[in-house]
Amino acid sequence: MTERSTGRAALITFVCFAVSMIDGFDTLMLSFVAPLISQAIHADHASLGRVFGAGFIGTVIGSVAVGPAADRFGRKPMLIGALALTGLLTLACALATSAPQLALLRFIGGLGMGGAIPPVAAITAECTAPRHRTSSVILMFIGFPLGAVVGGAISAALMTRFGWPFVFLMGGACALAMLLPVAWLIPAQTKAAVHEGGGHVRIGAILAQGRSAPAFALWLGVLASMIVSGFLVSFIPTILNLNGVPVARAALGAVVLNVGAIAGALALSWIVRRREPFRPVAVSFAAAALLTSVLGLLIGVGDALFGMLFLAGACLVGAQLTFPAIASRLFPPAVRASGVGWTMAIGRLGSIIGPVIGGSLLQQHTALDRLFALAGLLALLAGGAVALAGLWSRHGGIAGDGERETGAPFAIAEGKH
Image 1 (cartoon, one colour):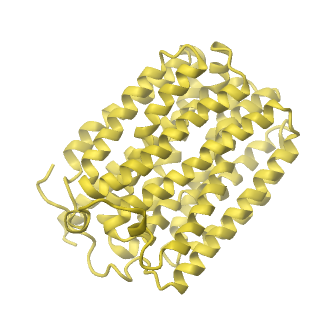
Image 2: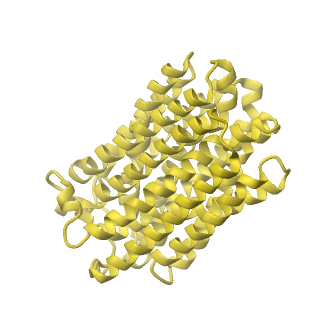
Image 3: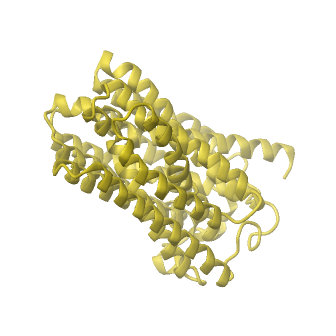
């Protein structure tokens, strides 16, 4: 790559990182303000679980719909549409007066939130040298928990002063503000999209050429792990508040979890620069299984819980942040956004199941040690599934970074904004 194209690729990746960051904040902001919303609109745990679930259903549909559309019509227009929908509907959430109304708004806004990640993952992969593709997409997707960390810290500081609607206004405004840099700096197409992305992308094409077994194993791992993190991220602030932690401090529980995720993802990005990603990610999930089980024994015992939340976030959510990168590695350019979209959609399905079931179990006063032990078993299942995906991809001869896609990264279309 020339110095000019290298600099332009770095700028494009930074824009994708910023989109990922805002998407992370907008997706997870509800967990920060859930205790205040519960009091303001008189919603019980089960109702809150349905609100969480409605937003995640929207992200599932958005991921499945936008991924193939981005392969067919181009990454940029679909990303612009996803950001606009996210921003407008997040602003509207500030006006909600009931749980069903908030659930509807989060569902529609979720279409945009889920639709943003497949295009940015594909854009990042296609402007990066093949040997660095996996680690670059991981680093880009670190923006997702970083957005939750920064947004959560700001929310914890301001929501008791300005009220929970202010958090939605802030998130919606940030999403709309990203429209200008995306429209100006993201190229209209990459060569991969121009030459290979035409036509309607079917699931058969995504799973062709020996990809079905590793893809299904990967998707099982995504589903199991996201059930766990969907529950933790959504309900940790509420669980802490119920066990005597003040609202503002309880909101920091989700922040600490995501700070750990950033640390874990950074460590994994360094490791996968030197080896394939499947085994390190599987080991990380195995460690998360133990840590998550221990969490249930530490609720209400003081600050030790926050340290364990950090470690659990590093191993569990940090490993999850590799999934877009692994999908970008597994699926070739012609179906890359579709493959990432399906991967993220299945993960979002887990994010629906986690808070809905978790909210119901909390409503039934299930013992926390049992609840977190079950979460640990699911994390262990995720690790086993990822290990199988790696084994089957190697046996199937599926290329990793730089093996099938040799040479320079996909060229960036100059002058098309």
